[in-house]
Image (cartoon, rainbow, N blue to C red; front, side):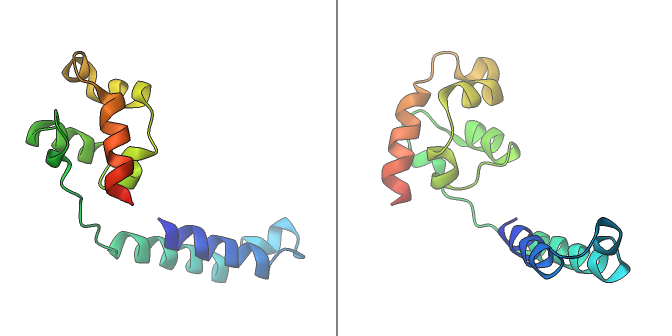
Length: 107
């Protein structure tokens, strides 16, 4: 995803003086597609959330499915968002501690 943002920003800078019609040229569209494909091709190696007390393989799977793969991403989340993602599974979980522990592990 970072690659896509980088390429999109580069494209915007190259074309900042062009009008809206010129931004939609075939060349620009092709660059955007290539950037998205490059981002998709980057493999993310997920962090092992099970080292955090209260997160087992099932919860890790649900977090991964929601796009949480790294301690940094988990650390930048909110208790409310995690509870929304995990639903009843997080009812008794101390997700605030998960976030704090993930911050320590992300460093």
